[in-house]
Image 1: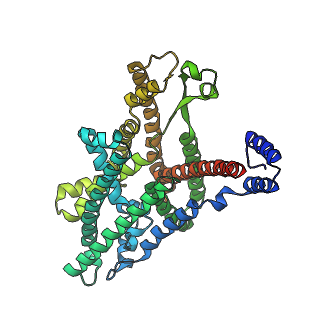
Image 2: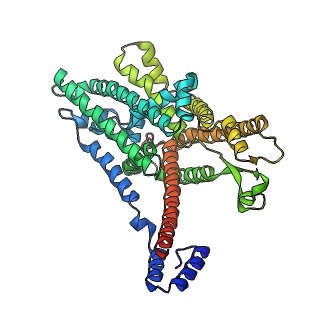
Image 3: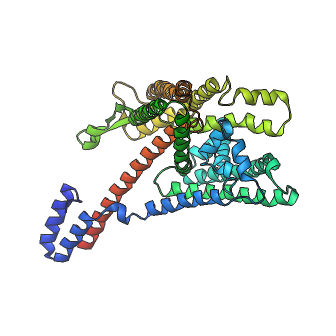
Length: 447
């Protein structure tokens, strides 16, 4: 019975004595010793969906000299970084070459539009599940538009590596890439519905993890021809970066809460607090910044205009403006996304309706101002952390002279660690819920 909690075991024991039925005892014993993970239907489903998302990367577009194209984007560059985020799908020219990027771009545009158009903001926040479902539909339609544009652009970009480029080839393969992108959007939504993590982040995690062995192999090859001590420096930097990410991701500011008199003597009053994470936005500012920094490079492919090419060269990972621009975008998106996720006024109103208040702070406007000030301070700390994380890889590369990890930057480590910890937390929550369901089912059988 060790799987049931103490009160549940005691209540179950009383019911067993009252009913005198031995089969109930064996039922509780089975429920207590069973592993929730083993019978959890969602985890294998998520693993299957992730495997399917990787399978499409290796279904290649016909008529392309993949070896030459892959060689052309090696050695860094923003396209190499995006290729790392997509798990090499761009360099492999697979059906899933676009990855989840069209959906990310659509999310960025609609989130920005929601701040300018009150109807969109109301649809997202105030109209309940139906409003959110309609907002997500708009995101998918916008993702479809982005997928069509990006598929045509990407296929046009690889034209020098196509043996028989023509309108028919462009049309058929544009449809294939667009369909692949929308399949990935559906996979991401399905993973999100399983409540084991954000589907978009999980797919990006799988892509980056799949590129890690190649990056490690390339780093070892480079180190063999230079100084082998550089590998130890890189490994130490990787370990310290991961340790710092885990520490900051788990750090939070707990604000104690007071409840109305009817809750004052309850466990709710003794244990309640309002948690604010140091990095509340997770990996989304990094993803948004990477997507925006990719735009000049994408425009430079098609526009034979020297000013655009100059901007693209300056915003290249090896360019002088890449690092400061990346840090500025991350800070801006972090601040914006923090308040987009949590509106201080809405939170203050909810606390007031629930009879909750912050000690020494009046309900209403004063609570909203207090929460807003706390979020601003936390966003500054989070921005400093993300900015340092973005600046760390170039510094390590400067000392080690290893460029194999240029596409696998500290932001990629943030995505890996952030998604892994978030998914593990949600899996544990689902396990706990499964235990409660088992006990509830046992009680129903006993009654």
